Length: 189
Ligand SMILES: [Zn+2]
View 1 (cartoon, rainbow, N blue to C red):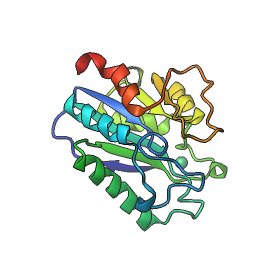
View 2: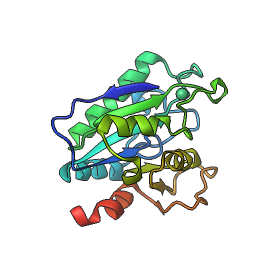
View 3: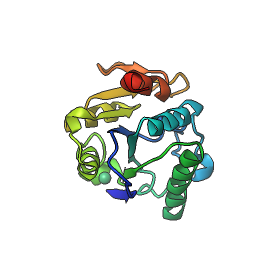
View 4: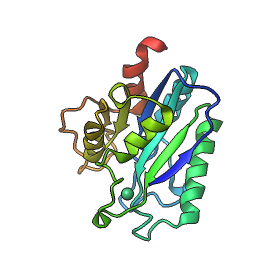
């Protein structure tokens, strides 16, 4: 598990855990491999700006098996990570921390979602209970990871997502991250 931990100035009022590819930015069947391939959803940037305004700490929890598949170079991975943080900040949002699994499924690591290990690490870092923290993702493995960690979950089902990503699990789902965030935080806005 790769951890990037920001330095919190103070405890946030609440926290939200987010998957990255397919939630913040457009996913690709051949993996998002460099910052040049990060194409943000406009609603996601709006959602992150709103989350900062209502004092919600955002933590990314993302499988990045492209690294150990040899498709994503380490330099590109960190440039991509830093680019995402910078672009979110430039738009008025903020990302507090990020947890990534670099492993391939056949490596049978303990961190790759649907394992709850990265979600638990994120909750420990922020000092929060999984039971009271939403995880928002777009894949079945995200929903399973949330379930395994004891988190409530929301699924993003974008109309431009691949057909293999069919939303038939029991989790509530929304078309955009902004819609999902409004549904959770509506009373705070
Ligand atoms: Zn792993």
